[in-house]
Length: 376
Image (cartoon, rainbow, N blue to C red; front, side, top):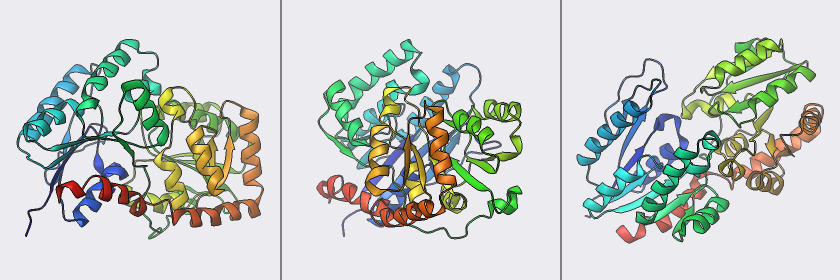
């Protein structure tokens, strides 16, 4: 009997809030692999380090970032030193240099999960020095990987042109094929009238996610509530904006929810929002997991007209596409969806059909056929 293939996944984040890692780990284990996850958390209140096959180490992030990254680097190196695997996944640019060293040390395969174009994110568009450093870092280490995983075709095309990378494969951020186990009654929990419509956003609260645009648009829609599932540094600003507009009672912040429970909250809404703004190259290429999670939950979508998102929405006919910079277009699309029960029903049915194709079980076949066979 052959020994199990040993896999190590390193991630600067909490994998319990990350469907990509959760699904990858579970699927690899179902295929007979032994999987170790090394990860970090610095945002969850009162979080305590978890040690096991999924280790999540507590970090503290204060005003200055250097101590944070030094602690992250030292802990990651220590854990990698104690872990010998056949395959290493670097889940972001931050873990890539360290994972590269230890994968080469052990003669193992190295897969770099380029979840986004790290040097071209919205948050770095005005930070030229950091952008330059990340470009140089990535341009060196990306060529050390045996295979680069991206979340969309446009990202693969970009890294080919910018870095000269030819060894990439697209593994989209697509959820498991599943049904809600017990839909949460948001109307009861949040005191929302039965006749009111519920808009859902799930994900990190960051600049460029269209959140302030949606909150401003609520002023023109009296009987509509906005439920935000997730957290981030933008939350305080959004709360202040809702208060200043006099609509605080219709904007609800639920905070982070476990990945395994997320669909139960999402399915309670009427419309899922993926209004990504075109503020950077990375955002222009956006194909976020929330789009596919709305589809899996049977939620009609209001999406930006960014190329990869627009393609999915139009191909499967699961919602409306708008230019988020045009407030009139945004309001018109919301009005169309909110006042067209038959259209919403059609989009909802189309989501159910699309979910039969757009699910992790299908997407994982690329991992099974491209990443594992040469080690068996």
